[in-house]
Length: 409
Length: 149
Image 1: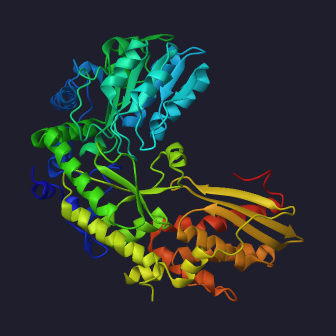
Image 2 (image 1 turned 90 degrees about the vertical axis):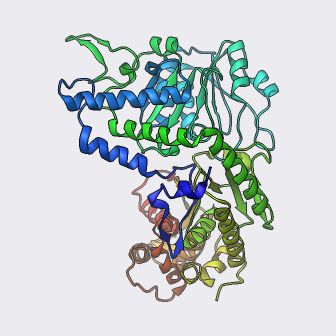
Image 3 (image 1 turned 180 degrees about the vertical axis):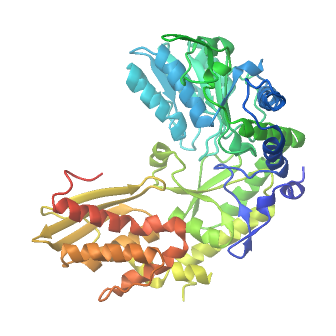
């Protein structure tokens, strides 16, 4: 795959920022959108827009076909057994909240356990904190190793017969850790728990097969995989989704409404109250087409190569600390540059046209574990090149010099 | 990097590397804890207010050079001043962050932060300490109950 040719498909990447060509390295926060996705959304609004599932008219049918077609694409993309097991959501956060509200709160009892890790994004942490508080269940953490990974021995030790839910991210948005989901799923199931996987950082970069991994619930965000913001999905095993109550009530999700009682539509619509984000789903479908054309395996290989290169280049900078595992990591590098605060690093890089993230990355407990208040993060995607990494490394050297007073007048 | 030089003037780096009035007060004081949830900057500001005068002020916290140098400058600027004057300075600082030209007579260091208004993402870093001051003075006047979080 040719990242330079791919970059041509992303209009936003061809601009100068503060007098320098943009180098976009904040892909773990959100990725940019290729022309095909932007066009798909535009075409939908210009030709097919109508509300779904109720129009007798032609546009209503077209909009419904487009929306349900996107659902089928998501199902195929994840190798879900059926598209009715894909629920469109606002993103990963909403998807995980549906599981926490619709499943955890309904099934957990006092004394039950929810097991998570300290590397979770707040979106896969706070819903479980709240569910534990509401039900009297106990929230437990699988400890982290010094390199930011977890061991299967610790998973075995933390997950007990009382554990009902294991919720874990596939890929850490800070450490780049790739968790052994299939093996964790096997342990969880053996002990009678279900596994909920935060796929926000894995879906854009790795080939995910929810059946091969034997995942019970899987959440993803469209905007981190070339799709629009405001659309994501929840995959769930059919028997689990079927026994869950809806968490939002209103239009679109009902079967029969009486004055004092109502019944729900079948899966997946019982979870999609209100007019859904139809254009977003259409855009997500186009993003999946785009990614599949390139091939997830190629994207994964490209990012791994680029990350190895970045690790080498950045390791050469004296005083720069890289967090997370050395080997086997996802396409991002989280770091601190001596005692220069990451906000200051990010501001200097921005003046050089380089976009990185600085802060706690929605992982405050993990920041405390790392014993830092914040970090800077460069995260890669299919359009990034070694030249981008070179620009980052050169600007970091300048940043260091600058904060060493050397270049101040 | 001249835009950067404007932002990170020597005076800012000086306050960042050797902050003034960093520490905690022993005597009775108003404590304000403020943080910036989007980025994790934190400040704990302690004010000793006597008869409407800022008798002593100290801060602890963690954050970027802009937030911590601003806190250091703010404490120096308001030390010994009437609380009302300190509030006026806070307003002046907000105006400066909107790009208005203002002068801090007798304490010009603060003007070094005027360049921050060209970096919208960093304005909240610069104003953190001044917001803590506002809350602290209001608390001192009895407008706030307990310790601000």
